Length: 235
Image (cartoon, rainbow, N blue to C red; front, side):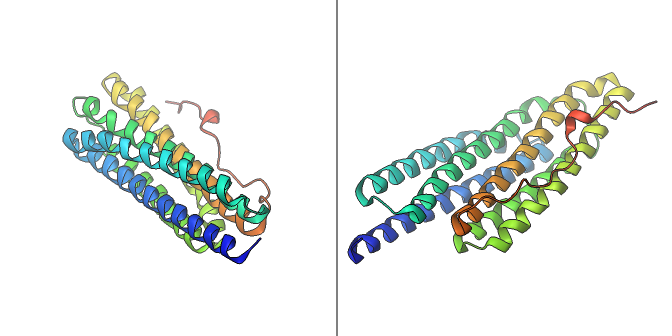
């Protein structure tokens, strides 16, 4: 391939990477704002998160358009093709994370009227903060193609799984203790599971960084206990 073609491809790919990082920043903001709205029972802030999801969707569409255009014009070699495909996958995962943040925000209006569960919203905000830091580091790993940081992000997903399991048990206990807690706790369980799923998507992004850098997938990552195995606490 001629040097000027390589240079053109590198410029195109760098522009797409910057677009992906900007999209990731929007998703980070949505996660933070949704969890804050939940804890403060701030319906107006939640509505802002819901409205902002359109920008995340548009960012994914633009990245996909950029990648398709680049593939058509530049005809990249195998290594560069991995990078292009990884970007499209990561954009799709970020868009899905934006959907989960929006879903969290949509529940704020219901929870604002529901029975108060002491400490529940704060616990979910801590869970979201953990995943948010994983997302920040995953994007940093992608920007620098830092395999060690990507593996560190993957390892932290076990903590998210364990936190999710603990929250499930706590909410089940609240529902058993007082039927008035059932509505709120069911919403909190869905939110906790969505945040846990965000952690999975972040780890997928970190796995893409490893794949692009090393040309192979890591062996199956370690996971925490599944929420499917949780049983109701005994009285």
